[in-house]
Image 1 (cartoon, rainbow, N blue to C red):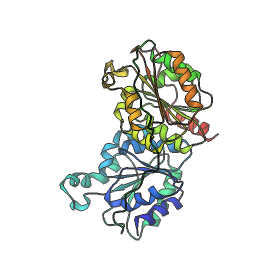
Image 2: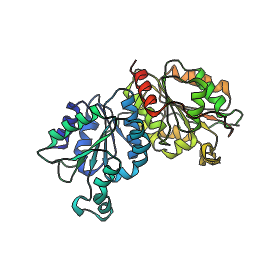
Image 3: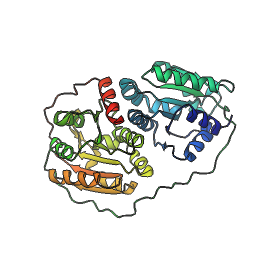
Image 4: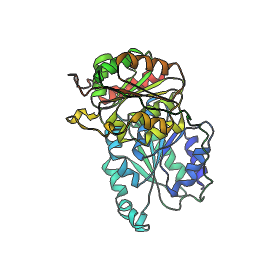
Length: 373
């Protein structure tokens, strides 16, 4: 079977959004997905970013699949454990098996040996694909995903697919050519004040809040079903929001992020800019510290995140340092095509707010219902 035929089998089984990191064992699969008209494929910068995108897409009503090399299981362990498995988010994981039977380059041998054990440790059910069992395995995965709120995996051994390297895929998305000069900012308001100013501008938009105090403060200010609060999986607010935006292109998606979160998955800014979702607004509250763990210094005091977003290719970028400007900027962005990036420089003050009162399952179900309306 060719990789393209396998991709068509997955699409025929109902999978309608894909995210992944390349591996030579599935180069034909990825090439086919990249070229499929109208089918979102996110060429994720890391496997955990792909997991975040898939989770956001499922919350928005899609049926996602993640493609990764087995080395990516190591990269995505925390995202799978503290996001997909904790919230109960179904996704098909197509995992290649480099180092299979000890036949590979040295860097793949240990991961090849422990791949089945890692899936068992994560309690992710899986099947190893065989040439005459592909259709049965896809059908099995579909049944498992319908009955389980959790990922399942199909493991791809070497030489399963018959095709070879494809021509490079051309990028059809135009980058923003506008120059951007970061303005001087002086922190004057707390993050909670800035979050309240941002929420003032919202109506029925879907909202993804970064883990830690951004989620806790947003929940204390204006809890609503359209809010998805991250409890763990630091660094994935942007990728989750990207998945939601791709899953519901007819709805505006707003991400309330923090500087530490953005820096942890900085490459995901390039994923947003490359796909250029017009309904995506990324608002980052930069206090230059890791607030939830004791105010340790963040590298954002030396690196302007708004300048990085502009260089990545966001359609518009703005930076503000007072509450009225936050509200005005969000309103402008809601009224025009994105993706937009807003940096709000805030103080390191932390509000005395409780933890999220909802369980992960409650957060999952109410947000998915709100996204389906």
